[in-house]
Image 1: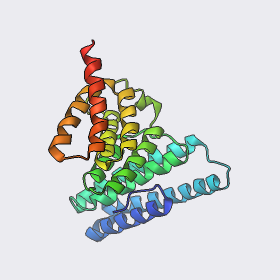
Image 2: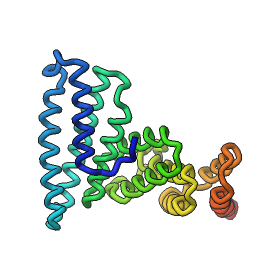
Image 3: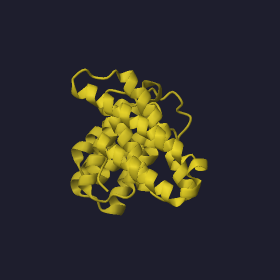
Image 4: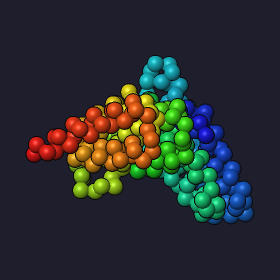
Length: 242
């Protein structure tokens, strides 16, 4: 599958595809299952998103709060659609669901909104990353993550609940560095590592220690190894001085 780009046409296509699949698995139970309500809600959602896109294109620029609210509603609907599919088609359309969530998050980010619900976005990005081996696609996915990080709500990015190692913000930043490393693009690695060391300094030493181990295990190119070694030396030294 292609890397999501946040375009409304693709969001509309993914909604249609997943709703059709959902309806086809339980046509007689559509009313009871909630699929009919999802069809109506998604139809209204796309109309609103289209109007906001038109405002944006006309340089009127929709208010960021409007984009944020619509994005939050869209993510909730996408989660509801995922639950509906899982009920009637367990394990089905996982990548399509992930693509829809990423596209919605990008749509918000590219229009000046904020992402207040991060967990489903992080899960969708991880699902995508786990299926990709091509360095060019990993490079593109790293760029997607960068856009999403920039749009995360300050309430989340302030990262006040550091006691939870599974918090989506932490997972997102760690995954960005992993994906950048897997892309073999040293410039992206530098950018991702700068984010990691700035926002998660408490995780840096372990990350770079494990990164060095992966350099040997997976036979990374020398250019990639050099960047990892640089940060490993720096953070091992910083820790030894305290």
